[in-house]
Image (cartoon, rainbow, N blue to C red; front, side):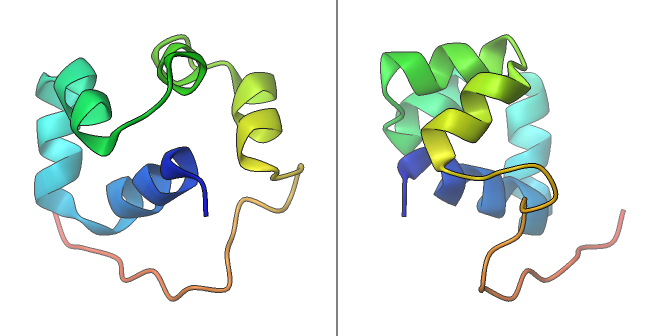
Length: 72
């Protein structure tokens, strides 16, 4: 699994990480080990690049992993 896809999964399931990402997205992406192109795609919210870098397609932004929702 790509580091970008792994980070996206974690952001969707870990409230503390999502809050940290809101405050310091560059720091979180750096710690996650994203490549320069992955970092740029996330920073610019470039959906096309994110799909290309993760291998996901429209309607397929899901994995075979269970993602637990968190409460506000």
